[in-house]
Amino acid sequence: MANNRMYLACRFCGALFCLAKYYPDTGFYSNCDIKEQELTHWLSDHDHRSEHVEFYDNEGDGMFTLITELDKRVKNFDLRNRKVVFYKRYQLK
Image 1 (cartoon, one colour):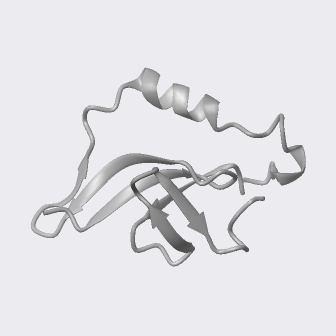
Image 2 (cartoon, rainbow, N blue to C red; image 1 turned 60 degrees about the vertical axis):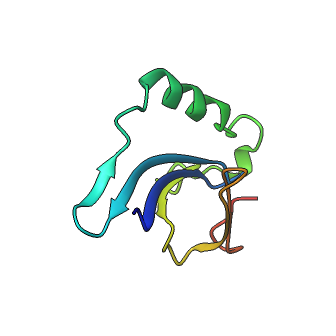
């Protein structure tokens, strides 16, 4: 049974895209069913740079980040709605 998942997260709206699951016996297992078009669509839907230029940092602290369920930057996961709430200093809005 998977006990930790890896997500691509939008730091502005908290949307999640599952990339892999961690199984204690075998390690991370990539979600091989990810379609490139699906990921590209998700990324374009959550590109908030044009809406909120003041929150975008060209120095690499961008709109998206990789997180796991054990990430200390995460305050709360809402897996039913595929959302995450970051602690305030990590959230962009």
